[in-house]
Length: 406
Ligand code: C5P
Image (tube, rainbow, N blue to C red; front, side, top):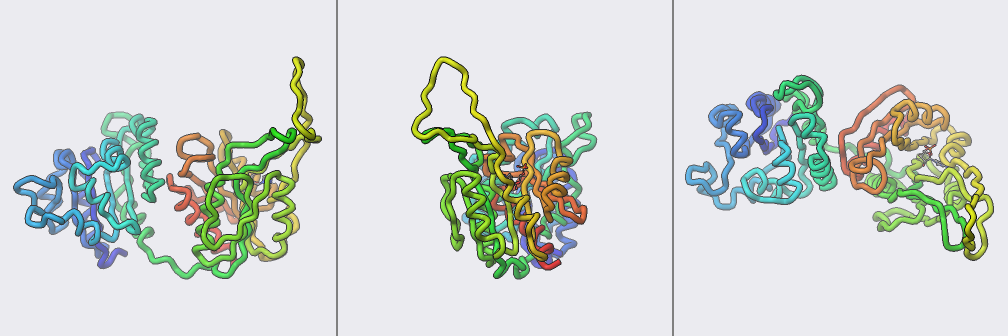
């Protein structure tokens, strides 16, 4: 699976480090060349001799120690960044995750993280006690890494070294190797090439009067990331967006609108002519029935604003679509779970729905990361890890592509 690939394996000081000689063995068996970079504390949990023996290379750690195997090569940290086809950090501890997210360079592992060439994939495999993993600091630092393009392989639930049972176990080395192999697989020519894709993005603004509106916190980042990814795959992309402060992705035709009604009108113009419609906009469900001209005057009394329903752009597209046209929507929920997403798939007659929970820090509006679960009509459910919105957009398109030619 990994024939000839150069894998830099960063090991940190957590109990799961005891599984890393096995991980090295599996990587070697898959055909990879492995260079281990261990933190000082990693070598308290696993022996340097074991790692050097199975990887058939000296273990690197301290940048300046006298007996460091890399001592002869003062620029080893730079050359390793070029040499590596991928960097796997397993187990990744809370401390190293914090150091990497802050850009510190105080040992070989953290320097290699910085010198790794930007296009090379990084797989971070956190393993720690469940409470540590759920702490706001760890969540924030992981989301910084995901935003930088790192893939985070979420820990599994089970018995922990702390004696507790819960989230935090490092996935088995077999799972880590499979995940890495997927990441390194060369991208086939995209089925989206030449396809016409219509995407809605951002919030809508519903006028109360000439100076006030109802809206939501949508930043448009997810929809823009999808538009950029689809354009990179050779699709002809039209992006109908509500008010956002984002640059138009290269090669994308952008149509700016304000209200849901305007978004509907603009989208309708392209319905017939698209192969794929992706509703990523957070369209306001209601609008003030009668926006006031000028500025509404305040008085001492309470104010009633009567709201009426906006049309559902996605549902209208799905209802009227021709054979072969694909319809994809999002289901953002603050609670309630996947059941709502399944209902949306049915009610709006979608081919695929991307479900995400709004948790303010890693998923949902405004943030740069997302945790999506993709559900399609065939009943396939794919739970994606915490990813940057760019990476999540790529995975969403990966799931959509096979539907295009069905
Ligand atoms: O029903 P709900 O608003 O949760 O559905 C979300 C999905 O439907 C998103 O894909 C959104 O872009 C789309 N939608 C739409 N027009 C609306 C409301 C939602 O296209 N009026």
